[in-house]
Image 1 (spheres, rainbow, N blue to C red):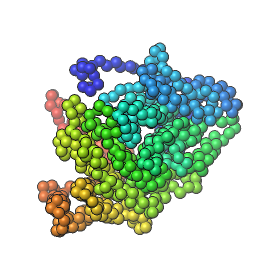
Image 2 (image 1 turned 45 degrees about the vertical axis):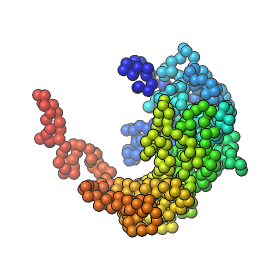
Image 3 (image 1 turned 60 degrees about the vertical axis):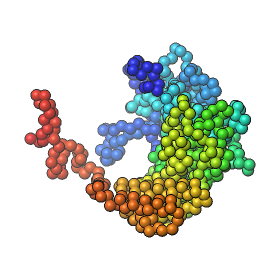
Image 4 (image 1 turned 30 degrees about the vertical axis):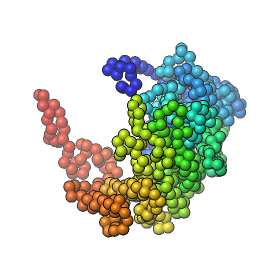
Length: 628
């Protein structure tokens, strides 16, 4: 409140209650298909035929707007009632034009589905309240810090019909994209330029953002699928596409797509297209997905990003390892040139840090994408009878290429800061306080030259040593010994970090910082992983590293002190003299009793002591057995 209210000690709230009549019964719902990218509504049908288990009672429909043709027999027709979105009139230029254009892209997809003029966007007039359930709205909101935009709906729970789309766009997104562009393009050679390419970068992202969030309110989930044919959906989280020119500058002419994606057109046709009388709708919908599949136009979403290298957020490219190597080439070129050309003339030199952060961490999301190959699968949302391999493991060569690309990000030469930053970045001046958008510090008011390397290296190391990924590595290796196991990944990680070559004292200190990150992440894995064999492998590697560091006798004083401290810290961790052994829980079985064997009040089924019941008796709490 103090950040957003003029007087946070007194605030007024306006509450809007809507009592909404459910729509008439003319809407025809469409069955949900997990391959089609629509969000489902689910309900239990207790009138389902008795010849099926509980799973057969679950009914799933897609969320979508009502759309009907004026002429149902025509291949293309105007709708009975178009889908109209109203844009917040408070949006300024150039964002207003960008949002109008990006939202309007969806009409391309509806046209391809056989509807003319079925979708449009207008500036919201004063006569329409954004809270009125009858209108789809795009709200422009200001926040104290940048955050996610969103697309929500009011939906009929019986059928999945969307009654209202409600998009909320944060105004700071444009400014964050502008900052990212400044960090990569370094446009202020003279200090007073108004860089057109930076502005167009940010405007292009806002166009795409409008299409994305409105897409959610049309019924769509995220689609992060990495296709061989390129960027296929506005429902992706798109990374800005930059390419490196021979002179080290960046080409950003294709930074974001302009227009709807190929998958988006497929999805609109699948969800909204009408079919002539007599058409086998199920077969027609299946053909749409099969045709898209043949073109490598498919759907994967949020939960797939951790373990399927074809589903990645903020990523371009079909091969995650190759794309990470490409981004590191760009990052290297940017860091080589980074300096005061990142900020305008007259700005405090300390504000280079705000622009440095996204440039230095330019590769951060591709690290996650590459890590998803390790222990991953090229799985699909398979249905019985579709004839496709549902869950092939990522090939061993692809996994090892990803591992090599990830380990390359830990090289000290990649993590040291540019000389211009080391020499010219002063403490913050009065009136320019530090924010969460900056690197943490060991050094008090002075800019810290080491913690950026700690932050960047921890992104890679923590991605490699995530507990569930470690468990997948253990399991895939025992199923197929040709695939890398956890031991191979950890040995490679330790070898790359502890065997790193440093050409300067600065690089040597960065290397020691990386080694500390690796050691502490191994301790985390050893202590906290749910799978016992993961803890065993991590612990065994810590013991070996403790012995190696403790026995080190060569090297300079700083290196010896570092290794001996690591050895003592690992020993204290393994001994845990002040901490009793904490038993990791064994995985619980699903409920066995037919009416909820694990629920309170049913403990007698397992001959357990029943829980206590609490109540108030004459002003005092009483706790007694529920079974007196």
